[in-house]
Length: 314
Image 1 (cartoon, helix red, strand yellow):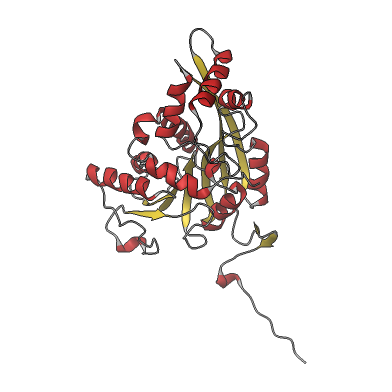
Image 2 (cartoon, one colour):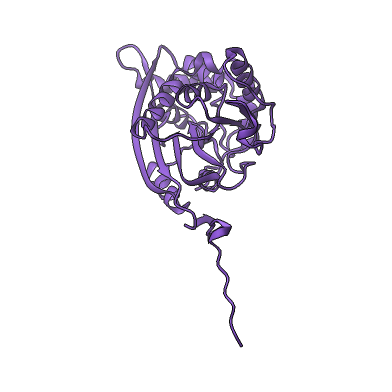
């Protein structure tokens, strides 16, 4: 389920956007809020350790902290500047302790007096965590920036404890369809990142070994006075074109003007629309001993105490 993305470009783009992200991320905040509403269906769920993948400047950690004040939090992002902003934001609240950037999360919970946060600069496709070490994996609008979303889902499955909960949102293929069509009217190069279909996400969840997956879909239509404002907003949150086959040179003024002109055919009632297709997913990690997919093979894990030996008499 490769999305054909340039990981180094993604890291740089979101790193540059760390300072401006919060001021332009109204959609991202709304999506994350709707995502966390799914937790209302499990009032008895009390995770001890929560992993927020693609945490950005820390809005998700703060919201989850209010819901689960006694949990330990692992805030993970590919872009170090995002983590630095998130750590500064958490320290500013004065309501809980924070660990250092890239500090190992292996420290036992009982050794810390109350809530504690660790900040990890790492890739969602290669989580630096032990197997079955997390109770809740939360990830809002991060999966679409993974070069191989299926690999990221397999990692989420690996680090979740038996019965642990996965909760994530991601963009679907209709996202920014107007901008994509405007560029396609001018040239054949990819200018808008491709996004994975909801059905493929569901298949990947099952292939990774998750049980009882539930997927939902929302369409958001944001409006702009002009296409340049949309493009500036996308840059401000780091959501630039990360397609590995993209044109590497800068877009010329004439070429950009042609794209802006092509976008005008979507204008209605004096504004330009920008569509975002959002997919929400919630699933459970299976009980111990149930297989997970890795490298095309089924891998089963179970507690050592369940291992029984036998002797054969000659």
